[in-house]
Structure formats: C-alpha cells, structure tokens
Length: 281
Length: 257
Image (cartoon, rainbow over all chains, first blue to last red; front, side, top):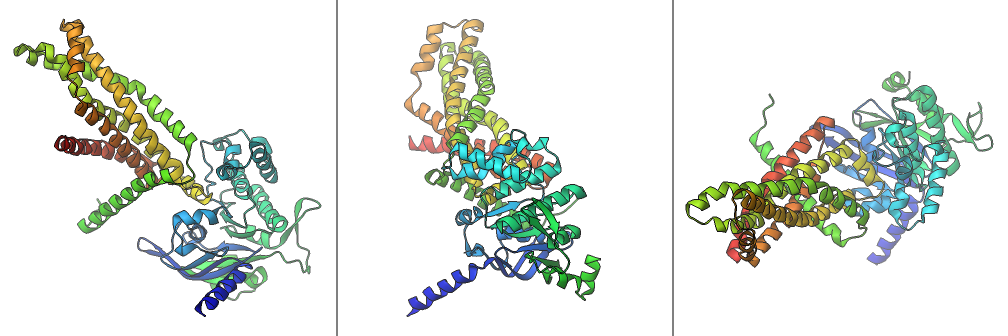
C-alpha cells in the first residue's frame, strides 16, 4: 500500500516539474552575520523568463548560484528541472549542471583557453563528440552571437561586450533547458547592452529556453518584456500596442531578503507599492 | 589592528585542517573515478618535472659539492678523508636530496599552483567550471597531485645523483682524492634501507606540495591581494609540512627497519 502511495507521489512530482523549471521554497541564506535572503519563494515556468531586480547586495546573484548548487542555502528547498538541489551532493549535481547554462557577471571565461576552446569546453568534456562536429557547433554558437571570426583569440583580446557574448555562446552550445544570466549587460554601453538583450530575447523566442536574468538596468528588463524576436527579419521587434502576443517574461523584485513583487510588466507598472514605484521611476 | 578571539581563530584553524584533509582524500579518491584527465596530468608533469629540472640539478650539485668541502676538514682530522664518498652519498640519498628537492619544488610549484588556481577562484573561473559540469578536484587537483608525486620521485633521483657528482668534483679536483676510492665508497656503502627512505620521502613530499598548493589556491579570496596571500601561505605551509613529514617519516622508517 505504502508503495502505491509513494509511486503515485513520485508520479505527481514528475508531472509537476514537467511545467516548472525552477522552484524556490522558503529559501534563506546568510553570509557571516548578514542575512541576505530570508525565506524567498518563487516559481519559474518552462519557457518563461524571469527578471530578478533589486539593489546591489540583495542576493540576486546568490539565487542563480543556489539554483546550480554552487552555494547551499541555510534553509528551504530548491528544485531545478525536477532535481532536489538542496539535498544533492556536489558529485550528483554535475548531471543537472549539464542541463543548465549560466553567464557569469564578469563572463568567467577560462583566460588561458582560446574563444573556440572556451565555447567548446562542454562538448569536449562530454568526451564522445567528434572533433569536426565540435568545431561545427562552436561556429554555430558563435554565429548566434555574431562572433564567429574570433575563434583563435584569447579572452584578454576581446572587449567586455564581446566577452559577455562569448560567455552566452558557451552557455547555449548544448542548448540547455534553463539559462541563468548574471547581469549580462552590467558596465556596457547602451548599444552593446541592447545587442545582448536581443540575443537573450532570441534565445527565449526561438529556442523557448527558460531563463532567470539578474539585472540592475530596468530599461533592459522592459525591453525584454515589450519585444519579441522575429525570425523572418532576424531581429528584435517591439510588441505592437494592443497585441496579445505573450512574451513569457515576468519580474521579481527583492528587498531586505524578501520577495516584494512577482508578476508581469503591466502588474509592475500599476503597482501601488511605494518602494516599487520609486524603484521603477 | 583587528583583534581575533582565540576561539574563532581555533575554529578557523580546525575548519582549514578539515577542508584540507577532505581535498587531499578526494584527490586520491578521484583516481578511481571517471573521468580521468590524462592530458592535464601529462601537461602538469611537464611543468613540474621538466620545468623544475634546472633548479633541482643546480641545487643537488652544489649541495653535494659544499657537503664534501665542509666535511673534509673534520674527516681529515681523523684521517678518514677516504670516507667522504660514503658521507656524501649517504647524506644526499637519505636526507638532503629529498628534502632540498622538496623545498625547491615547493617554492616553484606550490606557489605556481596556488596563484593559478587562486586567480581562477577570484575570477569565478572555478565556479564556471563547476557550472559547466566539471569537478575542479578531478580536472585541476588530481592531475597536479599525480604529476607532483611521480615527478618528485624522479627529480629526487636526479638530485641525489648530481649531489654525489658534486661531491666527486670537489673530492677529486680540490681535495685530490682518488676517483675509484670515492665512487667505490659512495656506491658500496649504500644499503637498501637508505634507498627506501630516500625514495619514500619524495612521494610524500610531492603529495604535500600539490595538495597544499591547490588547497590555498581553491580557498583564495579577496582579489589579487588574496591570490598573493594564498601563494605566500602555500609556500610557507608546504615547506614547513615537508620538514615535519621528513622528521616523522625518518623516525618511522628507522623504527620499522
């Protein structure tokens, strides 16, 4: 009897996570004496992009690292693609990490490897993919970020924006189910920022990848929420006024270790919360 | 100046020992788990082994030479200058070869490992590696440990040999000793126990050098200053540990044999 119950429960959980990419439940973490996150809960649906907003030090990047098990929470449950990240050992997490791509704030490219080796890293680690196919896929990934001419260069020879784009290529080469972007536009000029947001929107609309995106730049978040990628013209276009097109983008705002807003762009704009109004003004 | 409470300091020290031990154990356990990084191990062997060759050759040679010179006056007082070959080979093989090679390789490679891994740590490259599905202890630590252990073994043999050659150069050209006498006494008096002690030590020293270097690198924090601090601490800790392990293993092997 107990077997039947546990099997049906496992089935229910699996069914549940077919529609959910990431679930945080009552997650808390403190660094030394500072309580950074204090009981946050949210869900990221499959195919949805969620923009994490909050002041510096509010724990946005920590959320991304916790989703990959790079940092363990003090309390709470984190579930990513059906994997219970909080209870898994480091050794067991590598399987999950292969299904999730991350773009770090400072790109974190391996500085002693060329662009080609950096982007190919995951494929080479898999071990069984022929060299020709690896190269082909690297060129495809770099073409996606329009950097296919930089194969032989070292990261130090690239500009900040180019490094960020190579990091995106490295994250998407295996077409992961979930992408985590940590401030991908921080410190970049508006034109390069928009270009990177365009790539993120392209990934969202063309490959329907679920994504968590941390940013300080509200305008980037609103561009994401008000644009779609047109595959015919191969460019990002604004969603027409009154259109019912769903851009699958939501916002989450953190304050003092808590989630104070989790909803869509129109809900954010019409929020009556004083802090949120000040934040988005 | 910031003051630390003694209990906090002790807690930190115990935690560091625990983390170091876990890393050391995992570096060995990884040998029995897939994937194994042969190419990285060969590359590290080249950096540690071939790269350290000049410094080890020079250290071995000059140590043997100065040992012969320093002891010659004492031996001469007892009319035992003919024993100089035995003394040099005995000292080099049992003690000076392994320890000086260990200290030289620690200075060169424990610092190199700590600074390389430390830079990777502070620029999030270690996190990126974990995020890309690679275990840094398998990819970075185990190849360095294997390379250090194997290369220390061979470097010590080279250092021992060059030390005996250095002793010969001094004995023959400066002290005027007969060449046959020197080589016969240096070779014949060496026992199996001496060789065993001389070749067990470098294996342990190689392990200490790589694990300490990698531990300080992987735990570096605080930007470039943190990397510098990690590098210095790695060399100091590895050197002190080499001397401590040397004392313990010498005593242990003397009791056992």
